[in-house]
Image (cartoon, rainbow, N blue to C red; front, top):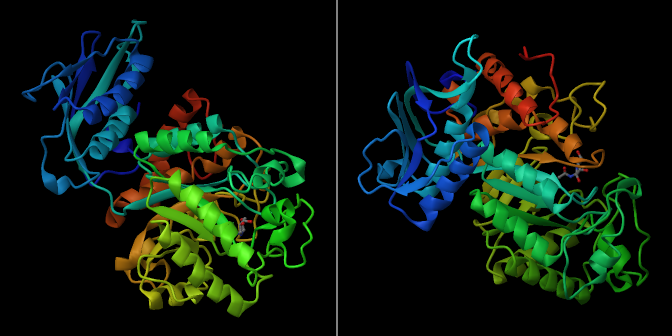
Length: 490
Ligand code: IFG
């Protein structure tokens, strides 16, 4: 049974009262006020509880917010809860969830979902009763950027798989999904002005497997699905390196005017856009314009990593010009840490993955997202026997994913510049959603806790006990997670 103490991410404040609230078939969900926002969140809760308990769970407008035999979702709350915080009071006669904003209600129901557990009342009984441990919780996130990255370029994953991934992120209060849409092996997003990017660039993948791409409507559907779950989708077009798929699609993008061959290996650093040809900037302007038009989020990620085939000085000029194009289309540029070598404006965001450019990022005084490969790269093998993943950054067991502290990871980076953290999952060795699940759980939940919970409350012994209880839920959900020997699974 998932007790109130087994929550992940750990809430800021928990006061268990060691009783229980029993759900019964007449229980209802009340929304105060009744708006499209509160109704949308209530529907998420109702869908889950209907599926879990088989009860009707009707949703009722509740003007007073008094506690009934049911669950009240209310926006009449303490404004200091901020955009994502919530207060959850579970009494033996009813549940009251309050938040200042709809996202807070959404995160409160994620906590509640982890607590509703069915079990026969006694061994004699067969009927399941559904109970929730009582207590009060007040919770707000530590970092504003709590993200995961999915590489759909090395191997493409269809819309339904990405939606499942989004479901998993939402369950653990993550709020950013960075989609790595283009690389040497694949271009995965339809650009109407440059149709061969997907016709040719989308026709292959590592070892020739998992080709494909998202039409603009499919991409918009993913953006919408994520947004309904309070997740901002951050698309990445990797430049100027990691561009072989584009260079194979259009001869004119190559300095020598010759289209590259499609590439389905896993080397990096061998490709580069042709930075001293104007067509490259026309190409990028078209791509960025179309991407910005279908991306309501504030951020576009333009890569910048491993541009080993690009002249250093040309790279720096390119990044500075690229940023002006992104800004012209009304978006904030995100890039891998190498972009910090250029003069970048304060609104730019630098994603640190090795730490080599942390000092430059601090110098530019820009916001940073921490994705340290030796802790947060979910494509790293767990150990030498792992059937999937790479190990250039070392082996990353669950404890390695958990035992790090963003504020002290990189001495050069002042804590005030840390927007949050993000766990990349590169797909060179992954083909299916089950492969993704195996590499994701139980490490992404460690990252989710680091992104949400207070540093002082976090410790490995507590996490390894709590995550064991989640393993039982993942098994029920059919998620083939890695049964790490570091955890005593039920
Ligand atoms: N580094 C490359 C990725 C991917 C990764 C695999 C970054 C920013 C190694 N760049 O990580 O494209 O190949 O672990």
